[in-house]
Length: 197
Image (cartoon, rainbow, N blue to C red; front, top):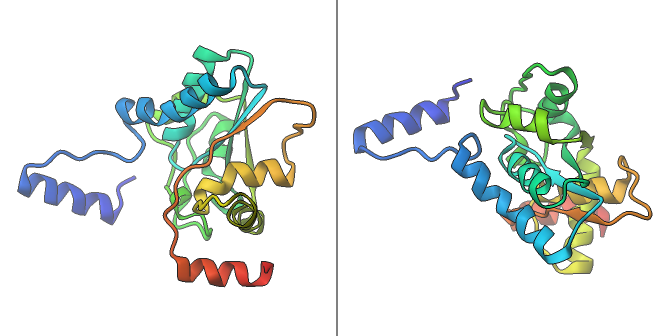
């Protein structure tokens, strides 16, 4: 699934003799992104549930591998926007699904699909996938910014939105939430948060 961005990157890399570092679909990237869950589990000890944002699946795959190694009883749940649910559909059917230019505030989850590296790991190591609407993502972001003083981007707030809005029952369980990324256009955030203030 080649995009214009990928074709342009290949052209520049070829011309300048530079390597291309994929954002999620490479074993080294998966391993690197998995250190988020590794560090969390080392700090907290075993968890019952780990909620992880999902775009192309690098962070989710790496987190699931870390959880399997450090906390085998932990349920790993991937979270993506309701309008960009390619990973959820892929997980449920066992067939890779794509989505093109999904209309979601979570721009980091606008990937066309899970990758060739990440899809098999998600199928083998993730326990469930859920989706949340953009409104829930914004409410989670607002709470994290206002109450916890954590600046997180929409994609990074996916797992918190799932925790706060309840598609996964967590009462009485030890739950870990991966918050990732703080790339936010502050002018856009002011517009997003205005109705919530």
